[in-house]
Length: 112
Ligand SMILES: [Zn+2]
Image 1 (cartoon, rainbow, N blue to C red):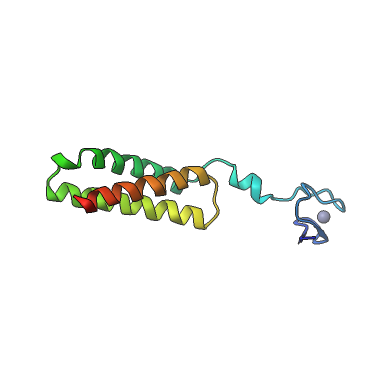
Image 2 (cartoon, helix red, strand yellow):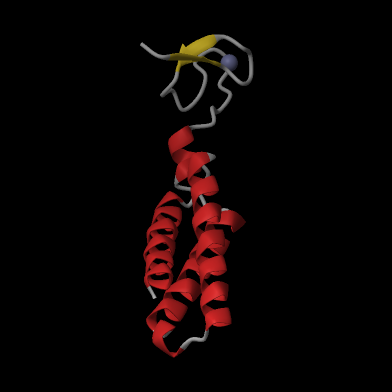
């Protein structure tokens, strides 16, 4: 049975307990954090990924510099999304979407 230490009194309690049975202190739940409001990192990754996707759609009318710009945006979106996922911050769904979208856009730019 996985146990954690209470944030209030330091006693060992079950890791799924919403509050401490000893002192009543509420315990931070990973699941609650994960479904909280997305971080700026998740938001910027999705915004950049959308931007990269829009550029990728129009890639045929782009010159070399614009393609390089598109590649840069998709890489930044990919990295931002990956960092957010790695840190297990809120906005997981957003980050996954951003990473996939950025990766697809990146491949489109590279393939052009
Ligand atoms: Zn306690």
